[in-house]
Image: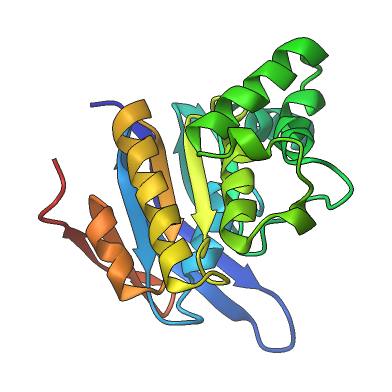
Length: 231
């Protein structure tokens, strides 16, 4: 099995009068096609880890290989292109542009890579169909429910065929039913597309959807847990 992410001794320190040691040396590997959750109490460091893995921040120390690339050696511009081409992101707050339609929100990352307008519009509709929103493609975010907005955000994350999909508390603003639908959608994408997914969550019920859990405590990897539902 190929390794999509290899992290070795990741540390993150925020300087100040009193330094904050957010990560204290975290190491793990994530295989291609795995659905992994990062769990822990608030302030444990789980979102900090996700930000390092997603190249949204840089660790103070450590090594990080993503899809075989030593990403910490990339320039800022190279990291931007790497993110656009190989990584997808789903955030808690959806981060949609309210002046744009669902389809236009979805194809923005493809537009950033200078794809042809015709091809990325067709791709946006195709991905919206995969997340069950093809008939809502021309609707703006204020015409969609919270769950539908998050589905648009997931479609946007998938538009460039990312190697890895990162999701940071994606159901935190959703009701119970919408949360279940989003997690089931992630599981479907994982199984049907072989999509590698890294999920940060504090919801105990989310455990049943994933293959493996990294439990984070006080900036350290406390333990790994392989789930019974993992293949």
